[in-house]
Amino acid sequence: MKYRPGDVVSRRKGLVMHRGVVLSDGNILHNSPFRGEHVVSEAEFREGKRLHVSRTECPRQRRFAASARPEDGGSYNLFTNNCEHTVSRAMTGEGSSPQLKSWVAGIGVGAVAFALTRHPAITAAGYALGRKLGGKL
Image (tube, rainbow, N blue to C red; front, side, top):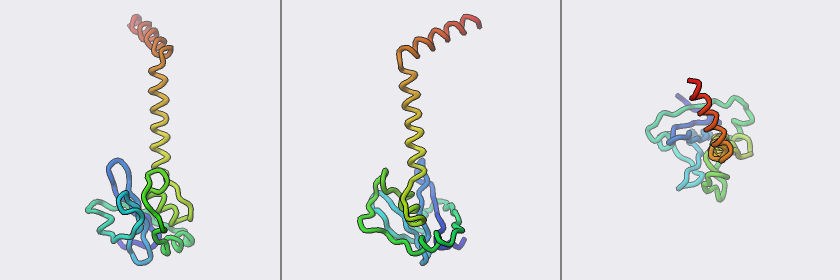
């Protein structure tokens, strides 16, 4: 498949998807923990894994991404400058990370659920309800 400038490419990296954006020369801008923001070939980005492509149809975003280059000091930071931040900044001028937001929300909901189920009043009520329902069975 021939990639076009502005296409967002992704590959599996553990539990998350690693993202990059295709530049005008066909190389891929991405961000990784040990190298920060940098440009690599498709083969280097792919690392032998299956590549997923999201086409960008917006001409403004395509032009913006085609001219994107790593910023000075574009070091990796999971919370403020990960691969999704780099891609969204290349596409729109503003960094964001939907995967990070989803993970934080999921962990938050899990923490609240864990805290609620460990609260003595809720535990006692659950125990009483279980005994009541168990007695009817």
